[in-house]
Amino acid sequence: MLYWLFWVVAVVRRVSRRRGRARLIRLGFLSLAGLGGTAVQADSVTLVSGDHLNGTLRDLDTDLVIIDTSYASQLRLPRGDVVALSTSRPVTLRFTDGSYVTGVLQAAGGRMAVLTATRFGTTPPFPLDDIARLLKETDAESAGSVAGSAGAHAVQAPVGLDRVILTGGEVLHGRIEQMEEGELTLHTDYAGTLKLAQGNIASITTARPVTVKTAEGRYLTETLDNRSTVGVSQEGQIPITALAAIYRDDPQTVERRRQKPRLSGNANVGIRHENGNTRTEEYHLDTEIVARTPVNRYTAGLELNRERSEGQKVEDDTLIELQFDHFVTPQWYLFNSASFEQDEVDALDLRSAVSAGVGYQFYENEQGSLSTEIGATYVNEDFENDTDDSYTGGRWALDLDRLLTSWVAFFHHQEGLFGLTDTSNVTIRTRTGFRFPFGNGF
Image (cartoon, rainbow, N blue to C red; front, top):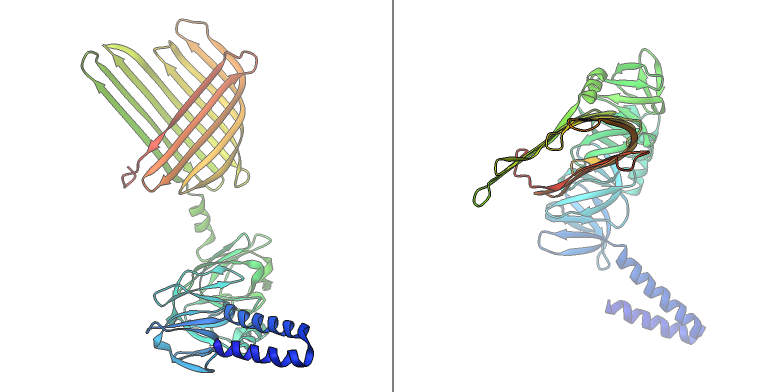
């Protein structure tokens, strides 16, 4: 660095004598900017000895890593001594399985690295040993032209692996899981599972037969091996853009698996006993079972509350809830619900309510769910010692279940029924609390 500073000062003096002070200042700023830019844009190599080298990565193969530095050009480093690699610019890498991928390489610690590619994001960490070669610009252009040329099918994929060539020339090898809704899922050894947009795919080659679904809804089974079209013996050439889906398994099996309901639910039990000046017994149970398919959800719930104090019945009510939801979009759904409530203490023989309306699912995943509903309802009430009643009104509901940490979950359920003409006809049910998962579902 001192050498460069002395050089800048010498140039500045020389130019100031010949060209004047204005040109001197311009040249000084340009020189310093050039020095700063070089430092920011450097690639880096870290050795097992702890040495850290900055410069421009020139080559990498099974034996050597070659880097240009400010103090030495074509510095040749044994590949086994390199524990970390990073690049400041996109580079094209050839992996040991024959894949060609372009992206920015970053060290991930422990002889691991990640690659950030423009077409599928950042890969999970992979061993540096999975990189077979750093392609020079001419090599990368050659690889891209071969991948996109009419002779791409002549390049053989590794035995047992599928191959996907992207429109940018990258070649990816792995196992195609499926392609649906414009997205192809490819599992690779070095980057885990990748999600690739169908519009970015130039060619697909499979190691074994797969079933494809055309845009017209036809199902064809064939080993794919072509460039910008899929070769199918019965139909000739089908453009990749005309494919609606690719299935690794039988489509009917996939569809049955997708439509098979996923069961979930919970049960909460509470017991309280007090002995002393007063004797109190209290029991509580609420349980819910949910069956979920991609477009439908079936829910059944039961709640029981029993309490006796000094031998007298204080609380004795039962509630049964049933609901069917049909999703018209991933978030919006139509619902039908029915509830049946009995309260012996309040002399309520039966309160039945039938509702219908629209709901919105904000999210639904492993961390929890949040939904809200609004609709119309019809309520009929039968009392033991009072006049029966019935009315038409509205219904709202809010259902929240959220895992706060690995051992604390918060839940809140609220449902309201109200009459349109008589404001005294209002029923609100709510449950709020915390769950503490112990393990194995408990």
